[in-house]
Amino acid sequence: ALVEKGEYRHFMEKEIHEQPDSVQHTLSEYLDLVTAKAKPAVVDFAAIERIQIIACGTAFYAGQIGKYAFEKYAGLPCDVEIASEFRYRDPALSQGTLAVAVSQSGETADTLAGLSWCKAQGLKTAAVVNVHTSSMAREAEILWPTHAGPEIGVASTKAFTAQVAALLSLAIAAGVARGKIDEAREAELVKALFEAPRLISEALRMDAPIRNLVQDLAKARDVLFLGRGPMYPLAMEGALKLKEISYIHAEGYAAGELKHGPIALIDEYTPTIALAPMDDLFEKTSSNLQEVAARGGPVIMIAPESAPDPHGAGIRRVHAPDAHPIAAPLVYAVPMQLVSYYTAVQKGTDVDQPRNLAKSVTVE
Ligand code: G6P
Image 1: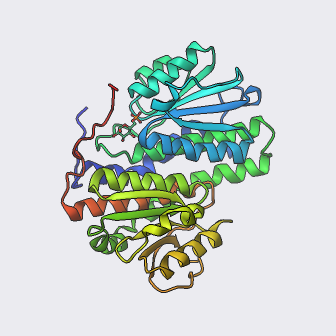
Image 2 (image 1 turned 90 degrees about the horizontal axis):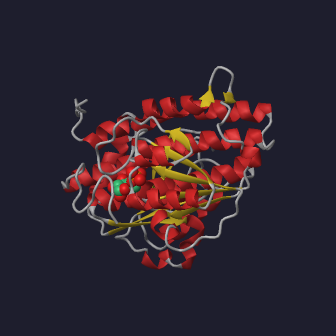
């Protein structure tokens, strides 16, 4: 069927706005809101020793958010690697490893090759894919679908949050299977994830304040994204998005690494965007932002209204909805996407067809 933009100016804008539905739909594949339970997984997570995620681009960052969740909620060791490295370096994997390819298209050459390599080693394989008839869907033993629907914009948005939704849901299922999560905690986490679609709708209303900010961002040559915990991979995804569609150089860094290099870049022309939900790490991120502000760097702090103000001049705040820590990556993905979208619109670049990039890289 022909996919059209309808009332939207770009497919990317439309796809950003579809996320309440695509996340809801994907969560419902893995979780049951009525019983507040994870649906039984096709794989016996109790019998698995380790997960190895393989992916490229945006899917790699979704995989890193998945890693944090598998380890935190399920005590299940998880590694994530860029497929183009993984496939050529003879990785040492134990037989108890479940290999998981994460891919929107299910056709990325390197990811598919990594998956096939794992299969040839006799490992159990799964594919988290958005195209359910793709090569990876057929190659993997287990198909873990995302339900983002067709994604047209080259820069991935709704496919990313669908991947994150699937991986977070699977982490809950793994936690239950491995006895790391009791019934009360399971219910809490499942309900928290099902709050995400509503919170994403709320986060979409951040477009007005974000449009004001991008006047300055569009003039920047370099932008730094900071976060801790799952906000760290999200910061890297934010930087990737900005590079892809606005051609502004950006880096995503773990806020705690600031002192080990990137702080040298800070000056009045280098904006820092911080993803700072209210969690155990908020105070630490907040003090990193004070360090940036003290060196004259403009700071945009994306945090809930209830979060305390960091001391220091030059910190602009954009209010995001309050979210349970498990749902925060889904919710904070939205302002991160809106920042790059509106910056690109401001610069007048080709948002849906950025130069030199392809939707799916099926050759090396
Ligand atoms: C290309 C696309 C990205 C995507 C990556 C991986 O670089 O432009 O948006 O994240 O490929 O694609 P996949 O289909 O495997 O998720």
